[in-house]
Image (cartoon, rainbow over the protein chains, first blue to last red):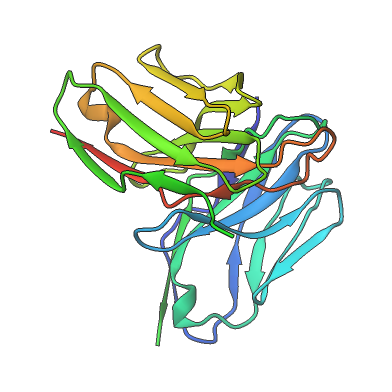
Length: 115
Length: 116
C-alpha cells in the first residue's frame, strides 16, 4: 500500500536559518505529492504540490521537488520566520485520475522558530 | 467564497453515546472526504463521497458511517463512542472532476471531539 515517511521532529531553528524537512514515499504508479501546514488549533492548509516527476512546487518561500528516482519530496526554505512555526505534513494522492481523493499523510513534523 | 465549514467546532461526549458531525464543502465541489487526526499523528482517511455515493472507505469499524446530501454537504456519524475516538475530525472537499487528479483537497478547521 501507499505510505509516507517524514523526518522525526520536533525541529527547532533560529529565525533566518535554513529549513529542510525530509519526506519519502512508497506508492505504485505516479502519485501527486503535497505539503500541508497546520497552525495551532486550525485545520490543514495546502502549502504546495507537485504532480509529476521533476516538478517543483513553491509557495511563500517554501519549495519541494518531486524526485521519482529517490521517491522523495523534501521541503526547504532558505530563511525561516517565527510565523512559520507550525506542524508540516507530507502527503500523497494516488495517480490515475477520476474521483479518488484519498490522501495518505506522514506523521507530521513540528517546527518551532525562535526569534 | 466560503471555505469548507464544519460544525460543531468542539464537542464533548461520554462513552457509548453517538455523535453526528457536519460538513459543507466549497461551492461547486462534489467530493467530500473525512479524516481522523489523533493528537500527534497525521490525518487518517475514513470515507470519501462523490456525487452522493461512497467511493472509498478507510480501515475504520462499522461504528463509523457517513452520507452525502443532494447539496453535497455531508454528515459523519459515530456510534458507541470509545475513548479512542477522541480526535480532530477533518472534512475536505474537492472538485472530483474526471481526470483532474492533481486538484488538491481543501480542508475545514475540523471538529474536536473529546470522549470522557
